[in-house]
Image (cartoon, rainbow, N blue to C red; front, top):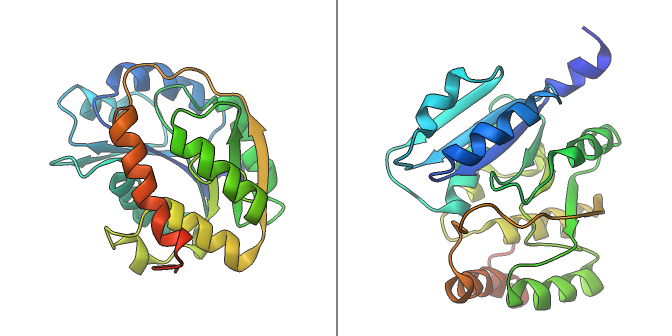
Length: 222
């Protein structure tokens, strides 16, 4: 086994998914090319997502009996990843995140970054545009809401991953704010296939706004 393959064994991709079978069938074969481990968090789907476990190598499906939501499903996956891996890449299954960028994550994990953040060329919601600009200019965290990110798992606290009221933007901001070993890089995003599982435009904006408030007012900063 080459050194490159040994290093890749330390990396896992986490994909939260609710009724995304049709997209996952297309996405997973593209991910295999990068020889990384993959964990799909099946967030209470009622489609055929459970049947994917034998479709590709190095794939683990974690089936949740009921939906706990995008953010909590992702945190559940991060807790699972901490048991075995050193680095994690989170991405969505709707093809908004192009697998071709995985090589950038892999290359820069070797440079010992704590965070690697994809900076999208287009944002889906007004709150992402406004607060994304704020965090970029003030904190040099270019896309705090982007779900295509790489994290050194030792920087994640199990305690805070288990608290439902602490959301991923808070956790990402805390790692960046404490360590300052963050790489931002630009990505081009495709239009998502299917509807957003995060909520429509109105409710999605409300959710994001509520997630960002603790950071703005310096409450619950980890």
